[in-house]
Length: 156
Image 1 (tube, rainbow, N blue to C red):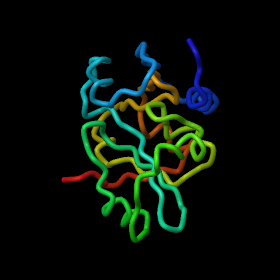
Image 2 (cartoon, rainbow, N blue to C red):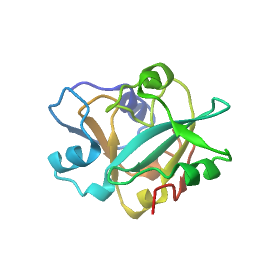
Image 3 (cartoon, rainbow, N blue to C red):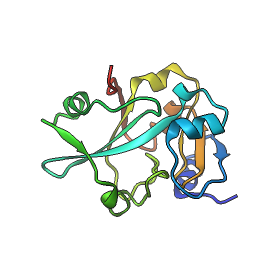
Image 4 (cartoon, rainbow, N blue to C red):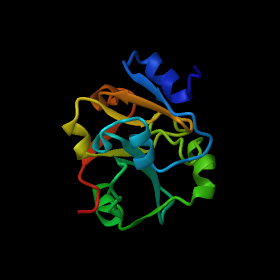
């Protein structure tokens, strides 16, 4: 089993997590991954990176079956507006590729907002930092690793 950077960080902070893997070589949408892992889609989250006009980056972790509401998200981070980070810039900014982007272990620490629905579950699943790698854990356990807040940031 390969340990990703995100998993090494979880280990360093002694956070209990379960590793989940899919034998895939390319990014698949989160709903497909959730179904392949036989998980409740509502407890599987995707990591999205946004950028403001002033070049501030923000990370949003939302259920895979939802869309980020950019207006709501901007308001929650005190910006006038946000746009999705172009995929061509993802690796350079975060250190992760599309389909393997984890909120843990990015090149720099960015303000990170989890959709408040994460608090509805004892454990949630999100990318483990490599395509096909996922971690299942209690979201509250990562509050000592990264500074996160919980907000309603998905489209109604």
